[in-house]
Length: 168
Image (cartoon, rainbow, N blue to C red; front, top):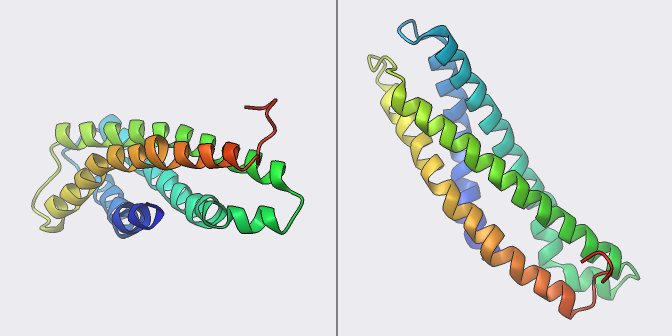
């Protein structure tokens, strides 16, 4: 499942991040879009880009490796509770960040539908389409993490006794 999330969603995010940044630049140059709307869209695109970069980096740098190797780490150390509690905290944080990501993506999708961006630049429709596809895929991505992977990992943590019961 982790490999599916990385290959199916994180790789797409990595490929789309430059599109988000390029679209932000294109929007900033648009004269036909009211300044307030342009500034809001630029802000939302920048926030979404930052959240996505952090999401992928944290999950692939910390959460997923810890999940993959949790048995190795805890079998070779006396840090069972620390590892279990840390992983629980990381997954909880990821769930909260997913909610923020989904909110930002929805804001961007709504703004892109409502804003009449000049389509004279041939790259603009393609950029908008790729960003909209990313925004449509994020709920599935969040569901796989929060409703499938993380509950399974939490059950594994409990079964292996890697948790301080007073905290859960």
